[in-house]
Image 1 (cartoon, rainbow, N blue to C red):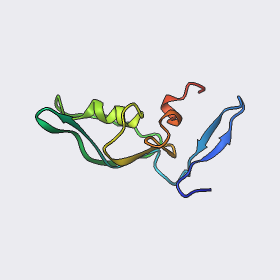
Image 2: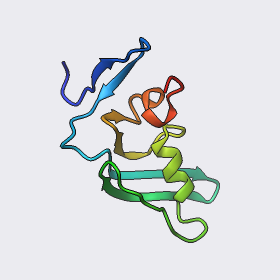
Image 3: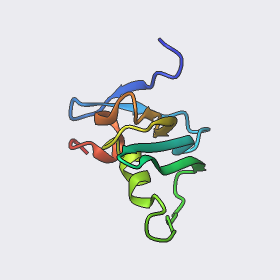
Image 4: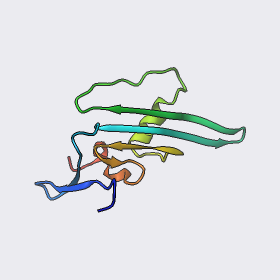
Length: 108
């Protein structure tokens, strides 16, 4: 097995899902960045965001218009690729395996 590769567990319905080390936070974001090339140059939407959230924790994402809230959520869902940094949800790297992100699974 490769380091940081999620361990897969077969579910009763035949699908497979990652088994997370319960000592790790459910969501870990480290240095997440997203920039866009524009006619005016480079626009930074998300700049070096890092946090960890334990299972069962309720959180909110607050900030003014244009602060990068929606972009951060899209990065976490694997809908867009980050320019830098990493994010893992329930042991799944959202950059390497966006279709396997637990919140996007259709089989749950």
